[in-house]
Length: 222
Length: 107
Image 1 (tube, rainbow over the protein chains, first blue to last red):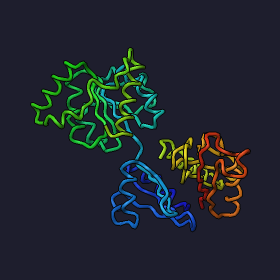
Image 2 (image 1 turned 135 degrees about the vertical axis):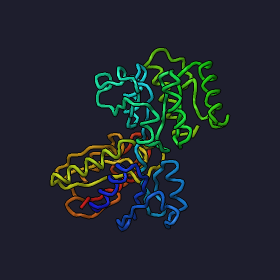
Image 3 (image 1 turned 90 degrees about the horizontal axis):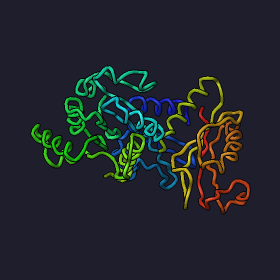
Image 4 (image 1 turned 180 degrees about the horizontal axis):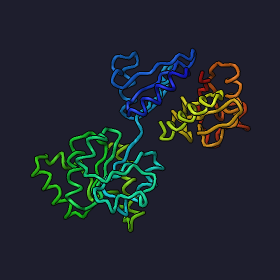
């Protein structure tokens, strides 16, 4: 591998750009193909699927190594459950961002070393962007904070949207979003009550159930 | 690609900046059960220091030994490990799978 190739792979990561590194396993020749250019490549047929399923593999002596952008988890609410979700998400390879306009919650002391934004979701989300390698979970229970984040998530291609709250809370949330112009089908993208039903009690178990569901959506698509 | 693999590339970059010679090992094929998915990586320096994983510990020792030679020769090589390998008793995969590991110098 040439040093320039390594630098390009690292730059693609920093810019959250999906690329494939294709290596001829016999000769050692390598080329980088950005996802946006995949359809023009000789291996176009294989590349599309490989990017979509994050699946590297060898084809006739050519190795396609998919370098998708790192997974990212956007948490709305610098709350107790977030503190349990974060270490699990980090183990699973997610870059974590926490958003909560309430300064008393969003403190570095409560969330050491985490990208923390004490701002309203509708102000900060456009700046950080939401893409298909991102999951968003809304944990505040407060419509003033959660709803603008869910609004932005529904307009994006995030692979997972979840919202904490009882069935009753979910129903009133769904109604508000429909009143705001979203269709039934769009609103159905929100997983709520959030998480797999594993009878979770307490924040750490709820965190397991949430990250279990996020993982299922990542790997199985639903 | 495994989540940690970008960290491997960053480690490679850091070692290069320190003036170390570096090789990258990547799982390019698996057959049967294999402990690490295709795309898993290991970075090795000329002294045999390494970080990452290609098999969960079964063949790393052999990959590192080969990598040190590959750094010296400057030529990439495709290594195969598994139960069919004559060295299976030494560096085989306990799970019975086979893996192909591509080892390349970065220069």
